[in-house]
Length: 99
Image (cartoon, rainbow, N blue to C red):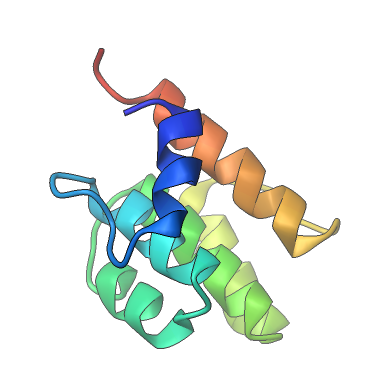
């Protein structure tokens, strides 16, 4: 699935099957379902899930918790608009997808 297809899928009722958990969480976050997005990445291992987890706590306006997850992800703490960060994470995670 390309980044454009991923974004187009937001018109649907649910994410495409087979999405890695960090992307599925971002899908739910874009739909405004923070709790579902958080539940997906809460117990996931890996830097991608940690990055999405950081983003979600930033959306929640919990900078202390977000900072912890940014460190776990090896990412700098984001300071720009959360919408721009969502785009940046989606693009980065799609670059890592097998073709």
